[in-house]
Amino acid sequence: MTNTKPPRLLNLDLLRLASALMVLLFHYGFRMERSGEGGGIGFPEFAPLAQWFDAGLLIFFAISGYVITMSAEGRSAFNFAVGRFARLWPTFVVCATITAVILSVMPVPGLEPPTIRQWLAHAVIISRGLGQPFLDGAYWTIAYEIIFYGWIFLLLASGLLRRHWRQVVLAWLLVSATNELFLGSGAIQKLLITEYSGYFAFGLVLYKTQRDWSARNLVLLFAAACWATMAPFLTEPDFIEMYGLHRSIEGLSLLGPLSLGLVAVCATMPSVPMRPALAIALGGLTYPLYLLHQNIGYAVFARFGTVENRWLLALALLAALLAVSFALARWLEPWARRSILNVAAQLKPGMARFRQQRA
Image 1 (tube, rainbow, N blue to C red):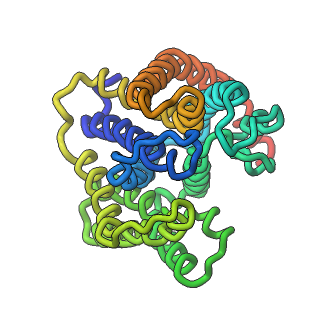
Image 2 (image 1 turned 60 degrees about the vertical axis):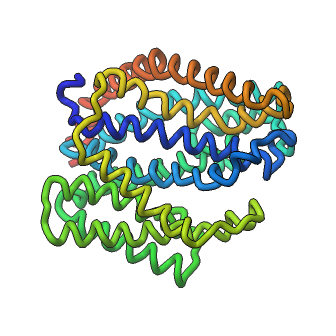
């Protein structure tokens, strides 16, 4: 299995884990004290650095654009959808359940304890669509990922991803810029991920460009990078409103290029000298760790944290999160993925006959 995977993906596996840890450090090292969600516990000596680690989200989005485009290549829309569902849904539901149980016992300061209705709404992942808040603040990025998958599914089904992907990406970037700079439509912003479209588009075009180093692909890659560089400035007013802190223009200017540069280097350079199985295993920790860390961490610090023990508690918490993430990635995810793929394989012939009868 690992012999057929391009070596560069091992670099991306490691970068995914590093990005998840960046987001974790942003939440614990910066946000937790500012928001009060950790019950007054924080790491103010680390905050000047940790405030920039939300860049991990930008790296995530660019990696997603690259990997999802690669995953979609040569696959039917049905197979793509089944693969994404098998990858995301089982782990999400289990992590949401773990979060709901822990927060019922140890609520996050300032947040209401979860309800049964709220927990059940997470069966569709995007619980806000059912009028229920997310159990964890990190889930909003998963919603954006699913929207991106939905568009890839439609492009696959229509054949546009194969025949007219450049026109699609260019239109996406133009609509994104128009909405963010002039229209300000919240519906368009959510539906087309216009704030962060540059990162998804950069990953998509980077994958395509690696297979065709044409001038038009490079120009489109540059356009995606330019729009991605704008994203930190677009979202900074929300950051200022939430945290009451103005970050430097120089730092904001570097967030996009550095995030994209890391993804480009990891995607194009030879694999790091590491056993493939180890790199893949480390990358596998990313998704459950990301889903579990934020509100559970806040609740743990609020319940058990003191100024004296906060560093030791942080290490213990990280070790526990990594252990649970390893168990989910090692045992739950492969079993659930196989089960879902087997069911899909049994349903596919019947669906094909149904389509033929309707034709």
